[in-house]
Image 1 (cartoon, rainbow over the protein chains, first blue to last red):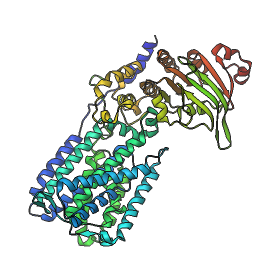
Image 2 (cartoon, rainbow over the protein chains, first blue to last red):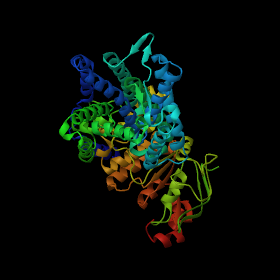
Image 3 (tube, helix red, strand yellow):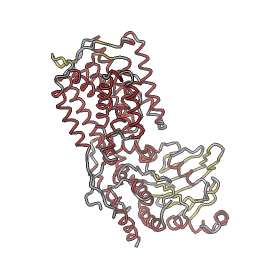
Image 4 (tube, rainbow over the protein chains, first blue to last red):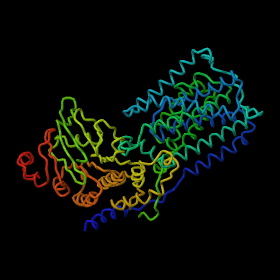
Length: 349
Length: 244
């Protein structure tokens, strides 16, 4: 009798029609990769645009780094540039003082620097007995980023306010990566590998833990998850990704300065992510493309050259206020954006 | 020895004395009800057991372990599971994923990363969803469920941890009479493998499901015993008049 009653309750609910799932994100990802593959050929006449595209690839790593923290795990970090900049400085110093810039060693070194530095920050900010608040973590990371910028600005050994210029070119054996198509494809390969790794995490059972943590971390603690440990792990991995980006940036630009580890770039990473659509991984990449291209175009128009940062700021403010899911949120459903982890049942209703 | 021993537990919120020297024993394999008027300290006691907040004084021993200052994570690992008073399902995840998230909490980090147990746990997730009549909603977002179904999902998630002791804070709150009746039926079979402490305002529901009751009033234990004893207790009748 009770069984019948219970069945009636669910049957009533189950009568609702379920829309077929449409997955757009793989198409967006595939389309982006296709454009990225042909871009250097299409832009071969304009070396400045190839340089811009390479820069976008590298800064996308910083954007993914922030998305791992905020979009996937709910950690509000305003200090991702710290790991980016410190790793950039380290490989620049290795090039200057040890005259060494082999790819097989320096890129892993940059990743290690980012990982360890972020791990150190995580130990202070996230691994307390009581769960830290979002504001505490945001201010802690922001302070770290600011303090590091101020520190290197006055430190002669690392070039003080002038930063380190003429960074030794990245090498693979006897081959040197200079600005252009070769560096572009190197940056693209690194970005694709990091993207696939991040996507693998997002779609795994660990990704489900992160998605739950982002929504209600207290609930997860009552399930028996060591939430702070998971946060520290993701934060460290994100630091590793940022470190890798910082090394590539340093090699590509031939320069690294205090501003590359300060709150300015940290906030820009937040903007890339929010502009494109946090939690989607591809959104932050597209956000980086949009912001950097917009910046490049607006800064080149004489009439608005002086006020372009204001215009850019207003556009971004409008996106955050009226489209907080980013512009990818206009195309992709919440369901797809957040992800589904268990098996979907075709005969569900 | 009782599965849960609470001795002299006190808890204050600023000037409000919410619990004062509370002693409760909960035997394994029983359904134990915490009842009392509004503000009597029922939910505060439940939260002190679960670790949502720490007791100011006294001790809480669970299955031989002193858990008075243990974190929720540590308590969960010892076999203690809580269903919150306010539904705390994860609204942006599917019903299936909510249960999977609870069930996989014992997996190692590497197995979670490699999704090693996703297929193996499918049977358990499906069985729980079938048992709680949610299998037809498995792919829907938890936020799309009715309030009563969210409560069932919460209980399913709490049971997914295979707890030794399940704490339910007002499991039938906001439910229709029919849903309450079904909830009672859904809970009955768990007695075979799980002890239950339940805080509930619906005294008929409590009377039907529980073996033992502890009555709280103004943060103190007013009386305790089996349902018949409590129903006959003059002290309890004075507080509840004819409500039990």
